[in-house]
Image (cartoon, rainbow, N blue to C red):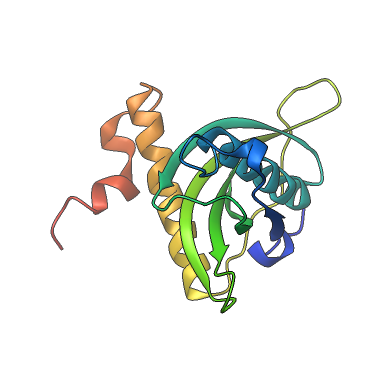
Length: 171
């Protein structure tokens, strides 16, 4: 399989926050935002793998800013690292100022997906070749997050998590 770049998976979804999607403070429900992020990230994962994908985990979510009723919200997702059958996606959420059009980053998340075949079994996916400095930074960080997850789950010995260990040892 030929490696792909993060830009090949990039997915952008823009929508308006409606009254039925808001809480009593007139801000977008967190669950509605999570669903939007999951949809964008799953499209990005599918674009990378060209397979059906399932959400394996929500690794990180930061609700940094509320998203008010009537806001134009844009969810951007792309694959940050591909492993054997799984891939990490990074999601950025932006809100647009109604008058100036200026975009502000409101939230972010990291989801992991697994590509599956027609029988629902994990299936191999292409490697990822980062190009920009940000893509390279996200690519390296994804391996540390995966190692941490495996160590915490008891599936990897801490001594084997070389990339993770490197951030705690002095050079």
